[in-house]
Length: 415
Ligand SMILES: Cc1ncc(COP(=O)(O)O)c(C=O)c1O
Image (cartoon, rainbow, N blue to C red; front, side, top):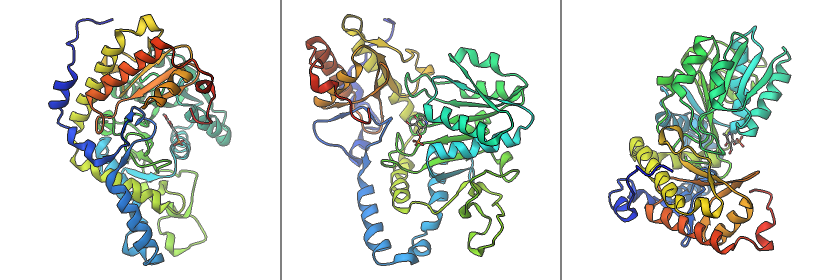
């Protein structure tokens, strides 16, 4: 345990918090301490009205005219532009579309195409499973003998970067333990060996400032429904470095990626811009919700987000440290802020039941098999007082074994 840190006082920290007014811009139920914004972000208040207006006026009255009059057709570009600022991407390099899994399929296929004659895709065994599953599928689909090679620890990555590696595919912040890679350093190490790099920003976008341009990343993907608060199943995003745009094709060659979809030509001719990464008709209601959720970020200072995120995590760790050893919790998130994202995770026995008992007491986090309980820290709508209360409730549940009842052991389809 690191006892050299200054103890955080929740009351003082809340008073000094420059982001505290943002909480009023979200709908949050009374009696809930929401520590799961890393899985599904809270509802920004204006999204409700904006979606209602889209339904009643744009769809209900204007009908198909709204593709032009409400500019539905350019929602993927508009949303992409708003996300670009948060991830350090230049204009015209980010687009909102599809899901993170599908976007990974597109950019990984493109990256392998751009780096022929090499057979390996390197990733981590502990990467989010959909990334690994998609990579397996792409390798099979391309059919040129590509294989996915997995490392067991971040420290093993540099030694794996040799002349037979085509792509390094990593998630910036690990979904399970919150470990954060050094994006610039790993991207450079890969580029020095002629390797292209794809970053999954699912747990970084909106949780901290990301600098894709500074790191010279080749491709990136990420979710809209986590820290960006775009709503359940919100459109995802993808980034393509300008040097890779136009020089190749992504394989999902749908009509929205055509250079002129409304010419209705029988042959596919791809757009040379980021629009090539669109496939079919955008889901307008979901895009509108995402667009509205993203407008809140215009007023957000990303440096303040990171400062508060670090402090919230430090505070939670500090409070849980007082009982973790005694009550069976092992911190699996790095203590050093530089090496973590915006979540705190513990491994423990009976983690699923413990999380159910917490949820029953109004503290919503989640469980990741086999033994991790996760607490996501979202600087826009969490207070230090709530984080302190969550730690106290966790202690009480562990000390009284309140989790040890049959109902808390029954697993839902989603954990
Ligand atoms: C790192 C990472 N990538 C991808 C996903 C999910 O992708 P999709 O939106 O396609 O379900 C998640 C979901 O939690 C994730 O944590």
